[in-house]
Image: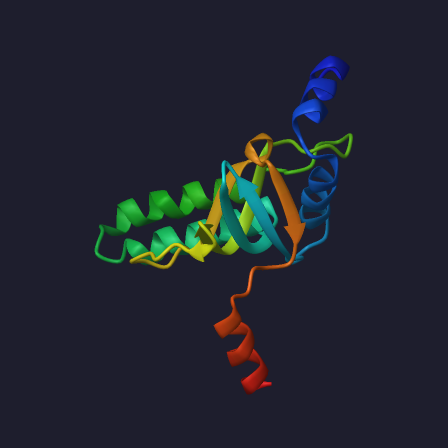
Length: 151
């Protein structure tokens, strides 16, 4: 990436978010509670590394292909293994990919979680699509009361 391209990137990205993404990609198994704002939607979950994302992706895909042929499953496993070889941080310490990865995302619109018919274990998006963020996850009053009662 040239200096000019890097300056353009930082004009469009939130520098502290870039730092957090580099952190989770540098320290193995790090998960940071975070809530992102993306075009008016809130995405609350745990910031994860690209490697962790690819591990989860491989598990999710292979689990869903139990009824496929062994040859097809083997090809998918090889593809997933190749993804794990990708380096998220380049030799200069900069992000090699423009992605933010979230584990156990919960999507919020209009102040309420979006009801989904399936579990979404992971989410990936472009860093420059993020409008804002805060550290921590959104808890609604009933969740807070239930958590307090179970403590």
